[in-house]
Every structure is written in structure tokens, then in C-alpha cells.
Length: 353
Image 1 (cartoon, rainbow, N blue to C red):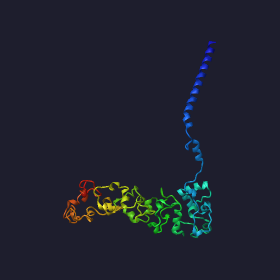
Image 2: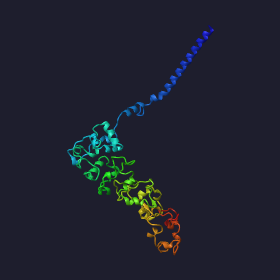
Image 3: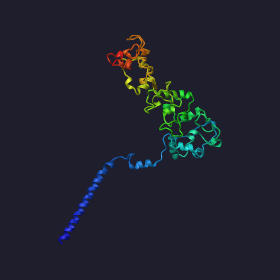
Image 4: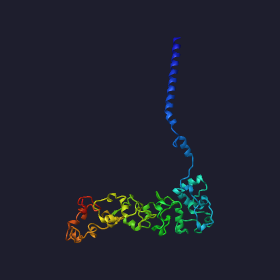
């Protein structure tokens, strides 16, 4: 009897312990959930995130795509991407990987009326009926039969403004360059920008071969090393300056990297303030620091009779010449006049240290 009584008591105690543990767990769970229950619903909640993921949204901008207007085939009608691919299978395979293809296909899944090929090339029925007749489809090459102005205007339908604000009247526009001379929207040859070549520098050098050669000189901007590109200084789509600079002046462009040369200085060097190009060439030079001439010959273009004897320094003044001159040894003029870009030193007018 005593054993049975003890067994019943043990069972009762175990039940009480389990009940208390259950109550404690429920209270803790309720307490932990209480702050979350008091918070308002957000777009980061699980339900909202799932709902957003289940929605198929078009890519911004591409959702507004329309069939391009081709005045040379005014009666043509849209035929759809499948008709184009029937003949242009290779072009379609290359196009699939581009940003344009991804955006247009995303928009077309939401709205089947969004054109893909015909967004840029215009309605294709006339071209499909007479594929060998030039101009019935908007082509983006110089021999396509489509005027350069129409090619460019088709691109600017979407790419208007921003860096292209000054395209009209720019040197590239006046020389009848089309967008496809630099860009290839039908294939991904470059990591960015859909360039016609593997990089911006390679694309520019198709025409600017003389500038490309300058980067082979011993002192050059680090374009061959991949640390810069042409568009770090230039805007190929147009600018307020003749060399298509991204800023209003040469100096402002240089100061983007060489900020220590900007000043302000108590004593300024007039040629420096006027233009960096008075002493430097921007692309490449066989002289140190992209200089136009070696020192002291560069300095003597202006400083021939000021402070020093007026004799012209020539190779005869070098160490192995007939008349060695200590001013040509080492760093030449900048051995003493080190702060040629400007100085705040007490001896500033002479641009010493």
C-alpha cells in the first residue's frame, strides 16, 4: 500500500512539474512575440516579401517601349520577335545576353504588346517581304541604307539627356558618327557600356590612333595599365569644350586627380593657372612627368633673362659639354625652384621649398 501511495504521489508531482514547465514556456513565447505583434506590418515581412517575389514586374524604362518610327517604311506593320528570329538566329543568340534583351524580355512577359526587336529596328513587315531592300528596316551601320540622323534619333528616343545633352553639334555628331560606331547593342563585347570593342580605350583608338601611340611613350597616363579610361577626362557624347572634356577647362579636368596642384597658393605661377597644357601633354611624353620639353629647356621658353645670366642653356652646358653648368645637373631648374605649381613659402615668388 505504501509503495502504491508513493507511486501515485510521484506521478502527481511529475504532472505538476510538466504543467508548470508548459505554462512557463507558453508565457515566455507570448512575451517574446508581444513586441513583434505590436509592430506595424512592413514591406519586409515574410508575407509581403513572398507577395512581391511572386509579382512579375517589368524593368523600369523598358515597360514604356514602343515600335520605332521608320519614315522610309511608313506603311510597315509590326511582326513580332519570332518572325525576326526565323532569319536572324545568330543575331538573336548574341543579343540574348545584353541589357537591352533582358529588359525588353522582362517587359514583354508582363505586357505581350511590348516590342523587342522592333523597339529599335521599327516595324518589320516591309523588310520581311523584301529583305534585300535597304532602308525598309532601321539598320545601325553606315551601309544599311538608314540615314545616320535616323539611327541616332532612334537611340536618343530612350537615351536622351544626361551625358548626351550636348550631342547635337558635337564634333562626333558633325562628323556623322552613329551610336553603333562606338556601341554594339546586339552583342556583349565589353563588360559595360555595350562597347563595339572590349574596352572604352580600344573603342576610341579605332579613330584616335595617334593618341593611342602616345601612350607607348615612357611617361604616360596609366591607360595601358587599366587604371584609367578615355572617359575619365572626355565625354564622347558631347561637351561645351572643343576636346570634349567632362569639365569646363583643362585645369578643372586635371584637378579631379591632381587636387594638390589646385591651391590656393599665396604665390601662384601664371602659366600653371592659365593651363596645364603650357607645360604638360596629357596623353604621353618621352620627358618626365608628361612634360613638353626637358628641363631647363621648358623653363627657358619663358625665363631667359630673369635672375640668372641670359645665356641659353644648351647641351654644351651638360656635364660632358664644353661649358658645364651646375643648373643643368640633377633636376635642373626644379633643384631649387621645386614648387613650380605654386608656393606658400616665405620665398614664394621664386617657388622654392
